[in-house]
Length: 195
Image (tube, rainbow, N blue to C red; front, side):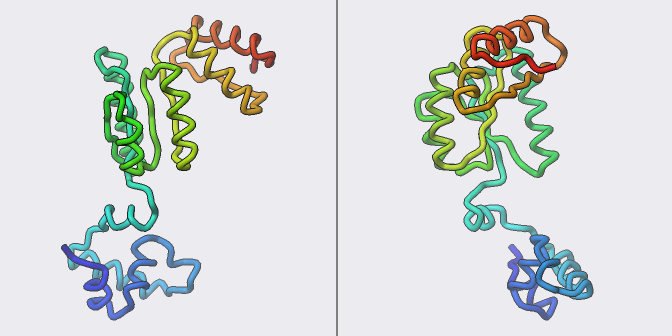
């Protein structure tokens, strides 16, 4: 495996210059364009590949998202997983799929992901998860494939308790049952329904 030190030697620059150029942080420190071109050419000719594990050690975040799944045994779940993988790929991230079992949160935190997606988690499990991920500063998105009911109420109530006064619903395709459940949840929370 080619190291930054080898690229630096081939380009005739310091290792820190190589790091700044290859990580796209060179503009603010005055590294000239000719040096950037030389560093990139040396990296390409040597076959340098960025070490994502080393980068994760520095940033404290791995280049992947954890998907904690309560179940992936139907067509909608598979389609949602496929969409999540495609979106992650578009942002140079990977998806690590885990069953939402008793040790899932602990295993997820051990991996230090860039973020966590949950699919079909029970509201009680979701609450504990959100609190712990928030403690570690790990972003979280909850995904559901049902049409309202208790989880919709729990989600809206939680957001209202956090001080959010404008809450929206994204549903694709449009879903009258989900919209009705959302409107009821807003009414219960004493919030106005958005346009």
